[in-house]
Image (cartoon, rainbow, N blue to C red; front, side):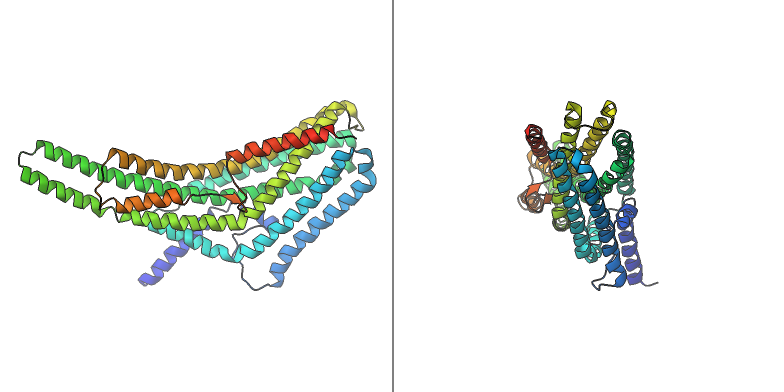
Length: 412
């Protein structure tokens, strides 16, 4: 086998490993035709057309049938605030799913280039694929899937006991939509984990090289203190500094890797920005709606067939609120972890520059790398409107409280 074939096979193997890190989530995404990781062609085949059309028709049909049943048989016994927020939620969730499918179809053919760029970064950094990425994603998938299952079962049984089986069935369509929101959030998180992993490698590589330079400088100072001949000392010092400078061109590789990583982040924002924006708005509507329902039942303004069991729907509705909060917090938390890795790179460089006096010529590559990291931030955002960070959570919490108070004060 020639050298070119070996390199090609190694490259394909590494790309396969990178793609394999998304595997725990792939079966769930594939069930709703939301899997970006399949390599799609630009040519529209019957299979690709049906893979997007069938879920739209099936989910749309279920939404319309259940909505019609609720308008005819269920809404007449409900408060206006609960009725209208439920209609808005069903329509918005279905619209969001169509948008999800559109972005999957639009960017699915570009994912191969995306994975190749990740391989290029790994090759430049000299780091291998980490199985920890797959384990972290698998852990998140298991936690959220079990939480979703427990929440849906408890909620279905609670409403069944209080309102009957038919009402519980027509409202269970929302369980499918909340699962889609979970999958969308986890899909973004899986890509954020990839960015975090490579930022950590850049930080570790920078720390290792700077520690090596610092060690050589410390060795030079010791030589100067304990060597009697000034000529030998100066000669040794120059040699060590030259050897130290030999490592500095490697910082250009770190700059290239970081720049490529920014391009990967830009692609992720392009793919997920609008989807996460709609997903977050949908979760906001969910939390306002669920809070309103739980408060109405608890205060007795919304009557049930069995009012003495009303505590169970209140508890199950609170569980659904906590599920929405968990989705948002998990997504934002992993974005913040990636930001912290970038901050660590800056901290490492600043600490070295303050403690150690670098030569003017030898520190240019390091200064360029520092300027790049400081000027080009790693930001995950929602269609360039707002960044995914902890501040977003506090803003969303205030929105939920405000609109919940408005709904509770409205005239029935």
